[in-house]
Image 1 (tube, rainbow, N blue to C red):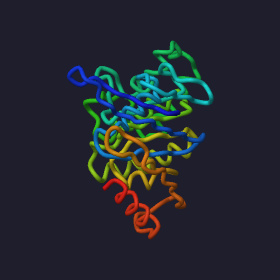
Image 2 (image 1 turned 30 degrees about the horizontal axis):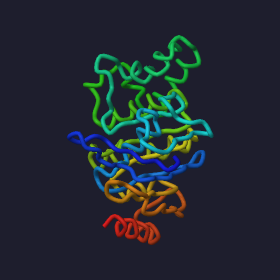
Image 3 (image 1 turned 135 degrees about the vertical axis):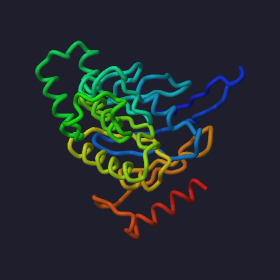
Image 4 (image 1 turned 45 degrees about the horizontal axis):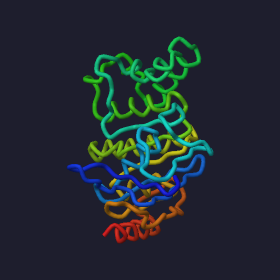
Length: 242
């Protein structure tokens, strides 16, 4: 992302959201965005997804300018946004179906593989109303990954879950990232979550957002919050946010 600025109309007046933001992520890396509420983190994710266009600046993936959504970029929202009349298996297979590839044996195998990877074999034929919050979000993750995206965009995917489920899904996301090899860009308000999962944590200022610091997370995996370096990084990021 090069020199990205964005603004929205608020009662007829422009409201600046992003202020000349530059951000990059290498292939297979995991980058988290943290900052105050309303500082434009989710807006940046929508720009990366191709759902919006920036006021100024350009977004590129592998040297190609992003102008629209593309299957190479998967997006997971805070709410699972599952279609209530479809089963778990049908929701996960929605991407291939929209692409006209639902009958492709390779795609059917891929759906089966994703159901196994997220541990929902016994719930393949369940409707979203029959799932817990954690199961619904696992389904959403599997749906985003079934088309093998190069980039997974995560917009506070665990923000509404209880602490135990959240911890379990943090481990699940880390495992899926290591297994699938995608590049991850995640918005979170949880500094500990960012440090547990990420190679880098990009800290944003209040709106209009600019990058305060791009913090390298030089910790071996798997990580624990008891590590002195973990506590040092957490303290540093919280000081930046304060």
